[in-house]
Amino acid sequence: MACARGSRSRALLALALTCTLCGLAPRAAYACGAGAGGAAGISGCSLAEHEEEARPKWRVGVGYAFTSTGLHFSSGLRVDEMRHGSVVLLDYSPLRRLTLETGAGPFLGGSLTTPAGRYPLAPGLASALGGSWRLLDADGAIPFTLLTAQLSYISSSAPPGTGYNAFDLRLGAAVGWTVGHALAPYVVGRAFGGPVYWRYQGAAVTGTDDHHWQVGAGLSLRIGRVDVFAEGVPLGEQGVTAGAGFSF
Image 1 (cartoon, rainbow, N blue to C red):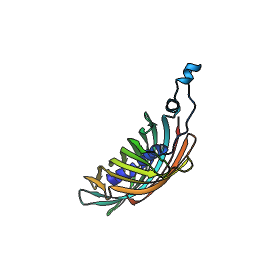
Image 2 (spheres, helix red, strand yellow):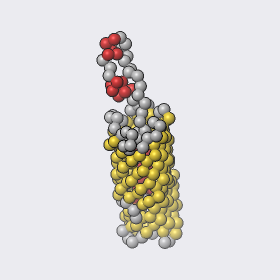
Image 3 (cartoon, one colour):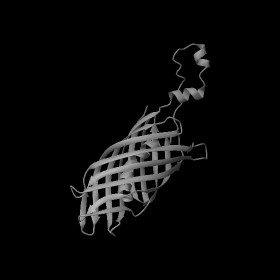
Image 4 (cartoon, rainbow, N blue to C red):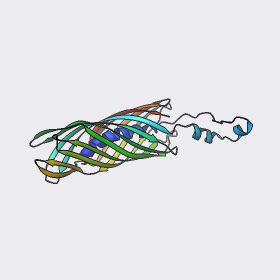
């Protein structure tokens, strides 16, 4: 499933990354939101409290992911898999360094290539649940460091009527620098695992990815409350993800 999940993970990862990476760039400070007015209200509002009160705590994002990987099953079967997926994510940041996320969206399809031929993966459902922790903020020569975790699930069929279900749990870290308070190039590494359940030629089989890791790089751009990102992963489980979001 690792691969299956890898694909979907990417779809989810794409989303997860979208949400996660939006937190990489520093956020602007806003004026104190004292509602009652008057000297007492102003003097009692510290800069830190102002920023915490005014900072965006929610984010809505959408992401797309393409993955290409290999799967091996308990029966000795090996399959080449390609997948396309998308997810809509909702993020919540109860703390400046912590972001929690949940999301779901359409699995767009793909293919499984076996020794007996190619099986198309039908459109289905992708979902994700995860979070991120900003371990270090960028400060001069010190890069930002972001830790991520995500649990994802994908449901499809190949061929029609034959269920294909993949689960994935992955842990990752992204390290990069923020340029001009807006642009954030980064490198990323992840480790993951989880089963893929399928029926091949009438027999139930359980599989996993050929690779349980991936290494790549990406770029995140934030303009005001809007962020966009793109990422390429050439090593391990291969893929491309992209997304955008709005914080409020």
